[in-house]
Amino acid sequence: MDSQNLFAQAQKVIPGGVNSPVRAFRAVGGTPLFIREAAGATVVDTDGNEYIDYVASWGPMILGHSRPEVVAAIRDAAGRGTSYGAPTASEIGMAERLVAAFPSIEMVRMVSSGTEATMTAIRLARGWTNRDKIVKFAGCYHGHADSLLVKAGSGVATLGIPGSPGVPKALAELTITLPYNDAEQARSLMARHGEGIACIIVEPVAGNMGVVPPRPGFLETLREITQASGALLIFDEVITGFRLAYGGWQTLTGMVPDLTCLGKIVGGGLPVGALGGRREIMEHLAPTGPVYQAGTLSGNPLAMAAGIATLDILRGMPYSKIDRMAAELCAGFLDLFREKGIPVRINRVGSMFTLFFTADEVVDFDSASRCDTGLFARFFRGMLAAGINLAPAQFEAGFVSFAHTDAEIARTVDACARTLKSL
Ligand code: HOZ
Image 1 (cartoon, rainbow, N blue to C red):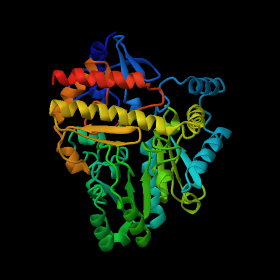
Image 2 (cartoon, protein in one colour):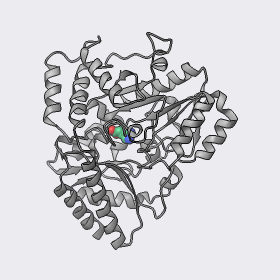
Image 3 (tube, helix red, strand yellow):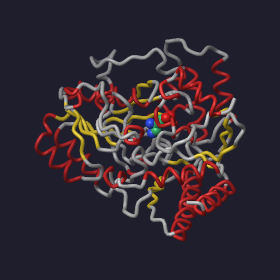
Image 4 (tube, rainbow, N blue to C red):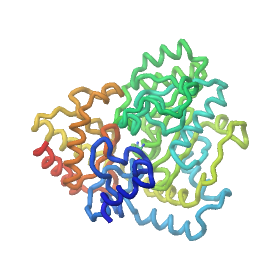
């Protein structure tokens, strides 16, 4: 059945026809692709159309789709049972790999999504500090837990929802939102109210308002002011973890947060989240400590198998290769847009990038929101028609994987040239 019929059918039984809002194509118009299968850097929809894929399941598929070793590991694990609700050796294997990859992580709790990881991190920070308020940055998206939906990025930004009905006002009031990359506002807030603040949570490289790199000194200031006030610094590396390096942004920069949230790549394409940090803080989680968290599918054996297989392949991979390919892709895009006279900005960090339809530098959510989202939508539709699958929203990242080839990068630039002719 084709995507259009499936979408009509899906809308009868699934709100908006999708299980995660951005997938509904509301920001770009048209019918979402219903995917039939995927391999390497290619996804195939139910109509049989093939696309070079830069969504990569929103980040996890850094090795490409259906990587044989990962599929074999999942098959092998599935043959031994799909869920036990009991500890397994593979959970230790996963935790040991994360501890080895992140100097800031001494202990790990596995959960089933990035949302669970950040939600648990916030609860742990509140329990550890005995403080209620938290600080986040506008345009950063940390999943859909109540405290974190305030001025969030990703689908919340795409749909223009400032906060969400259903989040109690009393709870939202405990979330203080600051502009990303504004170290001075963060410093002044902490100087005035630091003793009531449990944590600052931040995407060290923002990926959910589109890619926005941290300005020099921004994250360092957050480290300094949290340390001074006794608040915890939480790095949300759900996207950047194992994307920018084997480890995370903190591995590249030597920064040491108190807690780190992981997900996406760590699950090798299966539903996974992880929370890690210093032993004394992590042991504040039940059953060693009083802060409660639990999950039937936490540490699921299939997810552990997929994640471990992915990490073991990634450990030997030259990240410079995907960084170079992403740089070439972005340079190709920029040349074409310049020739055409359409002002755009491309932010790229390693293999993640966003093409913003604006003439101005994008450094925070305000500058990202000034993009011409209508023009983005037209560009998106042109690229899709030319066989390129980009994220269907301006406020998202694109990802190059180890499965992309130079020929596919060249074909993507070529598709951009054809798209721009009709823009
Ligand atoms: N919030 C995710 C992107 N940053 C979207 C996930 C999805 O729709 O799969």
